[in-house]
Every structure is written in structure tokens, then in C-alpha cells.
Length: 189
Image (tube, rainbow, N blue to C red; front, side, top):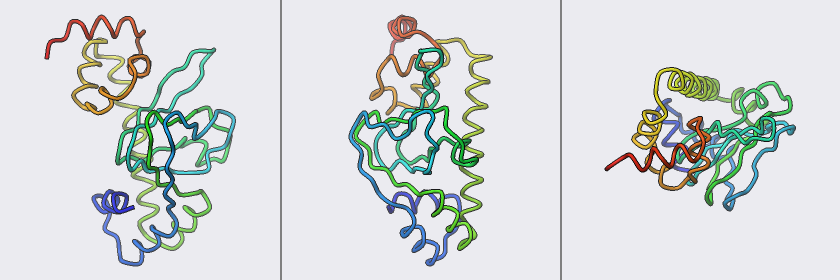
């Protein structure tokens, strides 16, 4: 829980009461690898903070799994549209490795927003981060070659590069696994 508090305090100053309320409303959960946290068609009920581990978010588009999120330690994730609008999600979220998650339910998050000043700011930060990530990925697809996208990925996310399957990384980067294998053979470290 301290990692969550530290992460929030790196962005927003918290009062002792806000820290207490955060510890009350956020709940720790341990999940083994390959645990499904959300299925398409279900409504997202939680915002998660990933204390340890790796999570992937994906969609099944015409029978093809398309990885859209690779979440690493000390980051928030949720199916944002589903959580905010309380509508069925298009996303799946699944643990890649054993994970320690800290989550808050929608009703508890709404209570936290009423009882504190920071929760609305936190919601805004999570939304901005989500949109910024999507925007950067779109830009990367438009201007970077497949090799440049992979090099950027391994530089920015070495932990993911070491612990996520080549199939998942390839999907996330918008290429076939065979193409990524060829690119990896060309790179000398």
C-alpha cells in the first residue's frame, strides 16, 4: 500500500486524513499469472494500481488478439470508458505474471471523491495519462518504422521486454511475431 501512497504523493500532496481514507478504500489483492481481471462484455468496476507484476490489456478483433496495454509496476489501469460510463467493456485485462494489485471500486472511488480533494485530481491524472499513452502510440505508428518502435519500447520498458512474450510485444507494437523476430536478430547490444 505504501507504494500506492508514494505514487499518489509524487503527483498530489495528501493530508494525513486523505492517506487514511486511501488505505480504507483501496484494497490489496494478489493474483497469479494468467488471471483474467476483466472480460469484454463485463462492466469495469475497479481502478487498479499495479504494485508488482505485469498486466496486459487487449481486445479480440475479428478473432485476433490485439494487445493495447502492457502495464508495468507502479501504474494505474482500468477499462476507462467502461468504468466511467458503467457500460460493457470492449477490453480484456489479464495478469501476465504474478501480481500484487491494489484496487478501488467505483462506489468507493465516488465516496473518496466526495470526502477528499485529491481523488478528482487523481482521476484527472489517470485519464490524462491514459489519453497521452494512446496519443503517443498513434503518433509512433504514424512516424516510426517497426524497428524504431521496438527500439523505443525496449529503451522505455526494459522490464516488459524481458518478461512479456514475443507474441504479446509484437501485437502491442503492431507487427507479426515473425517480423519482430527478424528485427531482434538485426539488433546488436
